[in-house]
Image: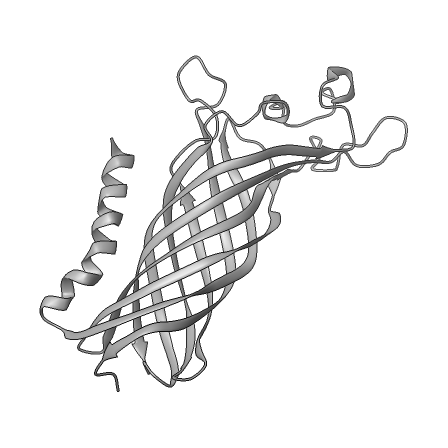
Length: 253
């Protein structure tokens, strides 16, 4: 119930950017372009799984419709369709926080889960500064949806052979996730970010931003009979975006 309420609030936030047009200075500017960046991700598990951040690439298409300027705030609605490499990387440690090693080689045990998603963030985009030529600061927030399109793992031990897990040495006994495929391929949550934009009337808009995604959906089933009560993503994204105006009808500065 709480998740539905949060998503409803974020949808209202996105729609509010156009609602301001009734009292602000009208804009009608549509821009299209692309984006690319780097994602650091992990999964919040309950029971917990010790992890470090998993690094992957993201890229895709971006669109933005600027609808009005309310006092000094330029209001727009944006959206993206992105290819994203996310997952988690486990910290396999003993009781003294030292790496657990393979029995024969003394090489630290390693496990990474490699997931590929198509992610669709929708957001309100609010900016302050120069519209047509120069720099501006922006903030954005809204819901994000995703669908898992591939699922694999990388490990230096046989995850399907219990004898190779070195369970007697591990501080964490939670290993069920290593062999469980993603059960809920549809993901959803909330994203928010901020950054700087440089605009030029002839060459377009260049944006650099940082954003965070807080997952509300679980990748594994979470009933009382299931192993994990929680298995939701968290993503930190650094992204570059280029946009070019296809429609420009406003009174800008």
